[in-house]
Image (cartoon, rainbow, N blue to C red):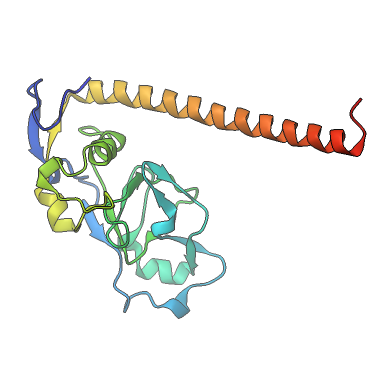
Length: 212
């Protein structure tokens, strides 16, 4: 559909990522420094703080986040996350990313994350993360280590990153296919779980003498 993004055989326009940043808020934002959000300020329930455990490659995991009070959130609103924002790890497995899909209107990123907000009228967030996930080490001369993670990632690198930008209609078509595939995978996972549960039930009946 897009061709090799490095060789760019289809001749897509090459743009700096900063030219497609969201105009509604800061395009890139690192999480708050430790001095702005201390460990003792976390609470058992409240406004979610997304951490590295909430990011899988191309998948946003809502469970396992931390929490702060609404009062603390008001002080850290500059780090807030909205649906469609891209979350990127900048520690541990550097460069791991996903599109955020929070279940609450209020949430923020933690210290070790970067929030990337793009103009969805020009570029689809899923297109970007797929580009960065499946062509690691090729885009913008970003380097990857032996574990496949990026060796370094910050807002300055993202601003200078050059990527091919196909027409938004073609990106939208890709997103539809991507979502169809995700639904198929979800259905298969549910089917596998059903088969496993059925098998376990049959084994219990067989060894208890209930199966005739």
